[in-house]
Structure formats: C-alpha cells, structure tokens
Length: 22
Image 1 (tube, one colour):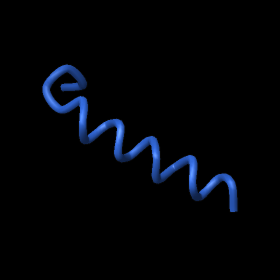
Image 2: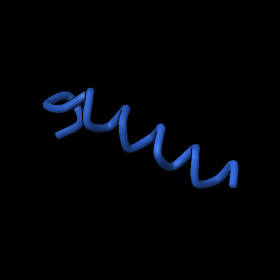
Image 3: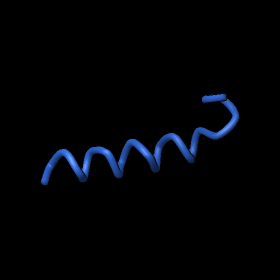
C-alpha cells in the first residue's frame, strides 16, 4: 500500500496542495 509507492503518494499530495492553493 503506502509503503509500496511512496513516490506516487508524494506526487498525489503535491497535486492536492496545488488544487487547494487555487
């Protein structure tokens, strides 16, 4: 799960933060 794809989770978090800023 999370431990399997840390990069994927990080990218998703970055996208969510960008959407929230807008």
